[in-house]
Amino acid sequence: MTKYDVLLTAWMIKDDNPSLQQLRDAGCAIHSHYWHDKRDEVEMLRLVPGMDAAIVSVDPFTSRVLAAADRLKVISRTGIGYDSVDVPAATQRGVLVTTTPGANETAVADYTFALLMALSRRVLENDRNVRQGKWTRVAGNDPTEKTIGIVGLGTIGKKVARRARGFDMRVLAFDVYRDEAYAAANQITFVPLEELLAQADYVTLHTPLLPSTRNLIDAERLAVMKPTAYIVNTSRGGVIDETALYKALKNGKLAGAALDVFEHEPPWGNSLLELPNVLVSPHVAGNSAEAQQKVIAIACDNALRVLQGLPPVHAVNPEATEARG
Image (tube, rainbow, N blue to C red; front, side, top):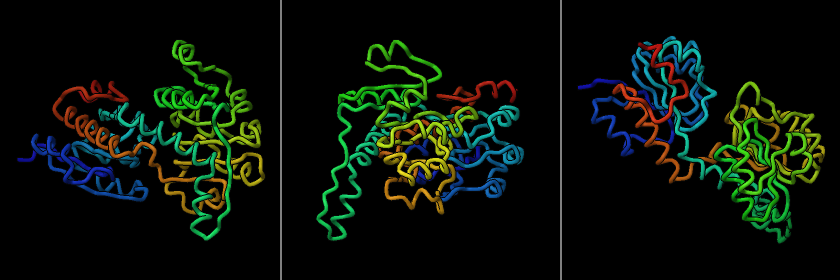
């Protein structure tokens, strides 16, 4: 007997994933609607009515979508970002928004450093040359003993810093909330953002997309960076002004960029894809096989706990419980 209807749109969770069994055992009917492109509001308006829970990736839960979600109790995100959800509107309607912190932090940090290394040592250019029949050696640059600037020294930023220290890099950091004790214990120096950008040979971004961080790295701040510097973004595309970044890279004001995220995803038609000094990937930094299973398990558990009247592992808006009554 079906007790709850659960919308499943997260692309990484297949119908036979073991973590879904706990939902089925609890009387949940799983309604799978996979989508590998960016789903729009119109599609969501069709899917959410009658759903008690939604296990999703970056689907838009706008105020209109939430208004149409007549039975929804929880939006369980497979990840830590939630900028695609109108959280105030969800809270007003008593809908808990949950995330999966800690599940993929190691994967993101590893991938960040993989991008940094591939970009710096020009791995893809060498690969491309050989495949095209060219025995042309492109040297690239060593990150060892260079300066890395980490924008956002949260859990992921700290893991990136540990990897950087393994390469004997000098680590600078910028964060609104400073963990001074951690920085002191791990040879990390907090500096203002402009100073970080001016000194760093490599800049990595690890900040959520908020009104205060949108276009945080704009034309003015890009102009501060060394023309030999590289920038890596595995956070959110909107943190960088992409038009300004394109101009800086095109005009030789910046050596290169590695982007796992974009303002609009997929980034078809984005001029950054035309540049040879840009390395790109499809928002995959947190999606190692191991991290995926952790994310899936937590997301499913979050949804089930809310349906059963229990507190989730992590709610963005715990006050929504009071609004629901």
